[in-house]
Length: 124
Image 1 (cartoon, rainbow, N blue to C red):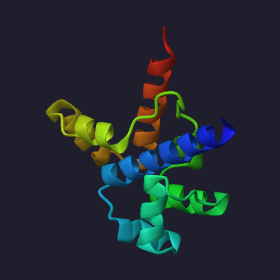
Image 2: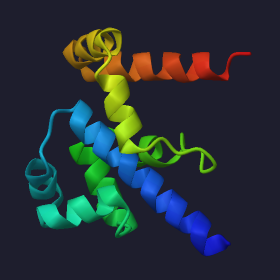
Image 3: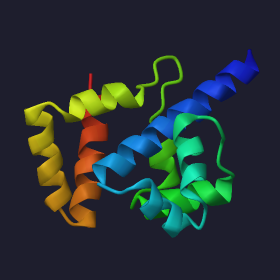
């Protein structure tokens, strides 16, 4: 049972990495270069075939202009969102418009928007 839970975590973290990379409009090669690993290794992390060491996870988060917490904490292991579901959401025109506006924000504005959304998720 613990092994299955660990696999679910690895897959969920990989899906978030992939979604964030797509959101940032980065290629596997760009992330790999920033992290100093082969693009194939980044692909293994994203698909859950391999789990990144903590130091690599920190470098990946930095390359994606986020924090390791953003890759790890929001996960719900019982219902992780697969990359296909995230990509389907991103294809919705209203979601695409929001993402476009978020991309135009500078880092402090994005962090504020993220905190606001997290607060809204916790509201009853």
